[in-house]
Length: 330
Image (spheres, rainbow, N blue to C red):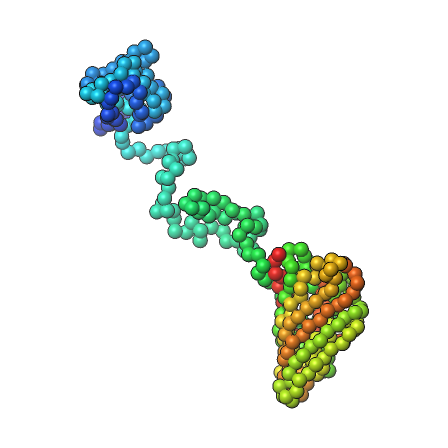
């Protein structure tokens, strides 16, 4: 026999059923929600009941209501007419979130490259970037600002000297995001002999630099000569970072320093001094190796925040080396 359209299925379809444990009541709960009673056939003692208001039963959602109470000796079951038990391949893009149970997608269904297969973030996350976390088994999102490290040093910039007259770090890096700063100098060398490494500070982003009230005291051991060196001064126009034996361009002559600068932006009336402390080591002229402690303070009366520092030699350029600035977050 010919057909117009697709051939009818040649297999049978089973419908979902539910058996009830009866008692003296008119109210039962269905396993599957229905729009109304016409979506299920109800049988009591193997006799099909008539659906509808004023008849044997009504249904809505998962609530089944009988017009008369059953007895505990009755048998009762329902056939869900619109809920077939069969395997169906849904059409593409036809399944949405409303068709999926909350727990239907498990880790076993997630591809192994769900993270590695996505675009990599090429820089530190922004404060508003979000991460997915499990809070006692419940998935939640959290902003990066709430989980990023606080109180740890973060590298801000590394500057490589190459014939530089000076190296300055301004308020691009000296911001309220950070409290303390660390400066690491590696293999700094001058352009000529008999030079002294120096630092000055600014409270106007480097437009001008403070030129008075610098005090410092450096203590080191000259290993070659087995002598204790002290270099200190009160009231200079800059910080002199040395132990009294200058260095230059000879083979092996180089300067390394690790300096801490304490809260330079907090220049209140009770804390108006720029202060630093650190370690210095260098090979000076005549191959003298000296290492020790450096410390200094600027006792200007201004309460303006110090937002820039500059390193240079007393004359000539910085020909080689790197200076790295770190900030410790509030």
